[in-house]
Image (cartoon, rainbow, N blue to C red; front, side, top):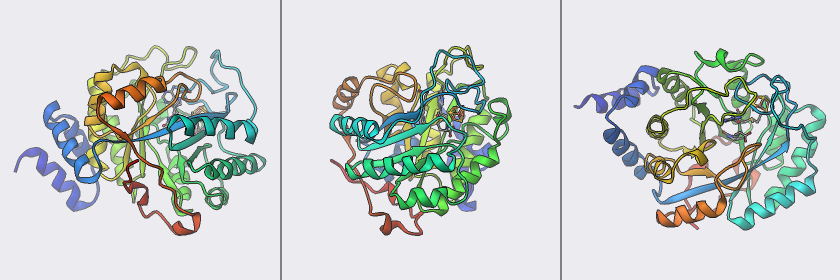
Length: 347
Ligand code: SAM
Ligand code: DTB
Ligand code: SF4
């Protein structure tokens, strides 16, 4: 048995990944790693299908948290102007445009530590209105209090995005105003309410490969792992403490995607922020490594994304097609956490 096969079989037998085992995957020769990731990918997904999510910042800037990568933290002096919560009509307009452009999921992000009681009601209205358009819904609102995940589930929310951001070991270098365990607690609340989990992290923040491996091990060992795993490359924003970090080698980024695919074979892996900075050939290698979801549309939250027209051309050049929307009635997923977010239906 080869070393790498032994690594994977050991992890499968004991049902949990140790960070050293995940790091051993990172250390494989590049071609072996990509071959392995593509093999796992094909066993679980249509390798030519791509999931398209469009983002909208529904409440921008002025955030109380001190996340060192973020343009929206009130602790940093960035050029960003804070804006209040958008009204529902404005959000519906943006969701309609996203749908017309070909997106199947609409993700709404708010620059909050977490939603206050008075903030949640308008967000529930947004979820219901976007869902009524036939789009999958996702929100990322920060830490949740008791009862808030249930209210979101009741409104029909399909996914809640809450990233672990980095390894437990490196976490203190990046955020001080909330803990790694606070984040795990919110993920547990989301899971218990029957909402699908979207959770990943950011690379290129000066962390070591061991941290990237440790983050992926924590995500893979969640039971079950997140249905959706965004892998973001740090977008360096002037005025944030992490601006000026040593950029990550794109080959290491592709390795990160490949390892995520191997350790979370049934999850959608999203090539997320930082994609516009990658040449098309590197993006294609990320797809080969197992990324099967992207943010689609000209803007992420506060920074630019790759243009939609360029994405359509790229998918066409690669012979890839868009994954159709997969919505269930909220009642159908009571007591969920069933992993049904991984069902395949091609447009
Ligand atoms: N305030 C909420 C929270 O932090 O959970 C939701 C919005 S927050 C902007 C969502 C995620 O975007 C962060 O957890 C982080 O992983 C990612 N993100 C934010 N700024 C980024 C940047 N400059 N580069 C890459 N990813 C970033
Ligand atoms: C995720 O993992 N990445 C998205 C989404 N979830 C909310 C956010 C990326 C933000 C990039 C920087 C910005 O545009 O502000
Ligand atoms: Fe606030 Fe979220 Fe940005 Fe942190 S990542 S500063 S919580 S908006």
